[in-house]
Image (cartoon, rainbow, N blue to C red; front, side, top):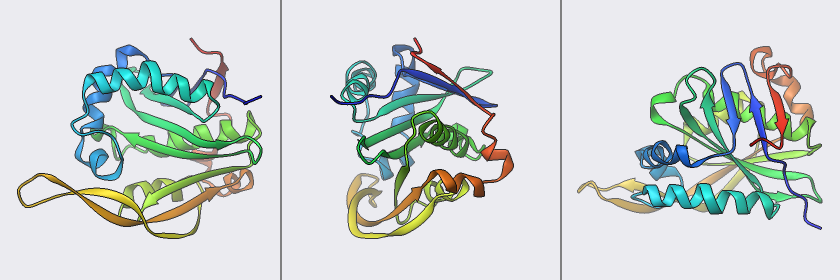
Length: 212
């Protein structure tokens, strides 16, 4: 029988990671149309509110119940504003491994939110779900995403050459597809010991199962 992640909410000092709901549709659509998100992800462009609603109501729930991963909204604790999304995907329950992806809204960048959210879900995955490996894949020129991987203690394992298709602006301001290398990162439970005390405080968040 396929294993699944529980419906959860994870709290950190500044953030709450929780399931997406339909109230997130406008903010999610706006975030996914940001140029950095378009450049480094495979999201549709333009990304409509219909696309956001379909992901929230159908694709994300199906991914969790199908055992493939889990999608969580990242929100500010005080304002409840949508900061971003974290996504565990390509989950292998036998190996106890999953891949992490994350997107942060442009207004929230530079505040350490991506690192805080990524570390929180990594700690939950290792401590609560007893997983043994978390993998991240970043495009070779996506330095911001690579910095997040480094901050939470990930180890670079190598480069997959020509393994990703990113998007870049052309002279006429349209988008074109460009091939790029991919850097593979991994995080194991013991790697968390190397993270700074500020980020690695395992008491800095609480998980609530069967959140609704």
